[in-house]
Length: 365
Image 1 (cartoon, helix red, strand yellow):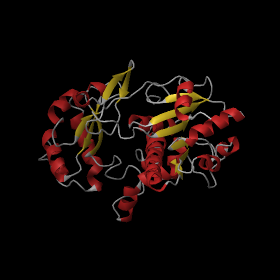
Image 2 (tube, helix red, strand yellow):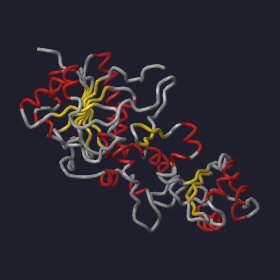
Image 3 (cartoon, rainbow, N blue to C red):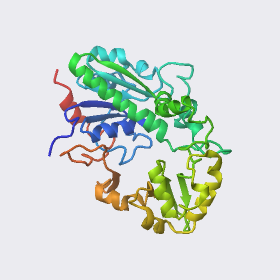
Image 4 (cartoon, one colour):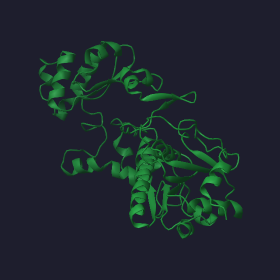
């Protein structure tokens, strides 16, 4: 087996909430030596055994001169660091980019915020829902005539935040390895979630997307791309967009000869088509539809709960979920050939590795 791809890369994570811990988990899953800077005795809010996995913890009082100096010593030997405070907080502690890059000119300094480092809202409080609201992402989600539907915190915190922060950090590290020059990464969830909507700006510009939720082929308006309730109250998902897949859907539902379904891409007919398809789907249980559709080219999957997902045969075959340290975890992703696809270490207690990390990372004076 090979080492994980980021083996040997040192990254400091200043403890925070939401996208920061998720980014730290991603980087540690890839093999980086991620050390989390915690407040003494304080476990980061919302960080449990899954999102906290894979790193070590050093406890530092960053309100003290000694704590700040120790952090700067760790920064000196790090490849990258990231923080998720409001703009100006790290500067007030003496740990801003100027101080950090003075100690380590090749450092990649990641900054994770909702609104960005500057702009009229940069100092305002906010959460995922607010950031995706101004990017246009939230307004596109939900049923017509109903309020926009919160997509958990997947689009802002994780898709538009943690993922872009991780990509930015890795791009900065690659550049620093060849040039010796560090970089400051300004990762804003409002920016990232706006970029996630790139395809929909394309479609709108081509006249293929109405700027009104619940009116388009990917937002639940189309009968061939939605979720449907079954006889047992459970749900299935249908995604038969392409004509050849739509034909299989018609065959499996017995609607091939119904003239109302002859024209797939006529939005004027979608409401009646959807009502009829919903009636057909409601006639069988989720498991019965699985027998009929699963594994075919309908583009089908049962809608599973968090508790059900780990036992789906496909997830079991791929070991998409793994038992680790007494807890069920989503396995690391993406996968690399001949590289172990499991977490390396359990979530740390705050300060659990302080002496160990200081001994490794800080050279004796």
